[in-house]
Length: 271
Image (cartoon, rainbow, N blue to C red; front, top):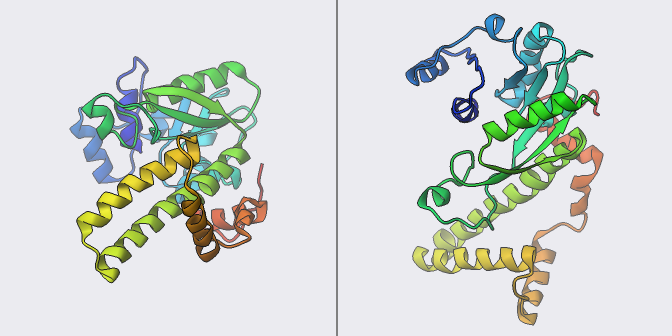
């Protein structure tokens, strides 16, 4: 993510400092003609400090950089888990923000080869961003939005929520639900091919097309499912989904999954 966001930032007129701890990372930055700065050089004068590092080290890295930051600066992370868990170092005069890309929608109208190829976002296909900002400094929030729109460009809109709401969206809605179902679809397809023995081309042809129609029918109401389809759907829900599935939205379950993701014993403090 550090390379992704810095590639877009490099297209702006902002003064950017690139920091990297690993030798391999430094080589990647220098290969693009950029200069690697030390944290001591970059952080004290920065208006926005972006921590594009894995969740499990965000707390430790923030403890290093936050004491160096100038008053009124923004600490921007790209995933809400550590912020919601209270792992980030804090100062009363330093704002905390988090901005997570939505990725180009499955329903996005694409017209170019580049847009079709950009499944992740940040290159050619438009995407939304969901973000949180701690504090009531509107100028700092607007400065943060400028940076967010730059690093995830092209951006349709930035949707502001609370830190907890962002954590509920990611992981509960996105990873616990959508990504899990995406992998389950792959598992079911592989079973049809490798265990049941149906020809792979036939499986993929019918499955990929029906995934598309299932999503547009269910999420957009494009066409109604048939009565027979509803009966099969009801059977699938009974056979596959637990009756208490909505518990993943409980605060206790959110804490449980975040402790797994962050590899910590428990959530000490939430917002």
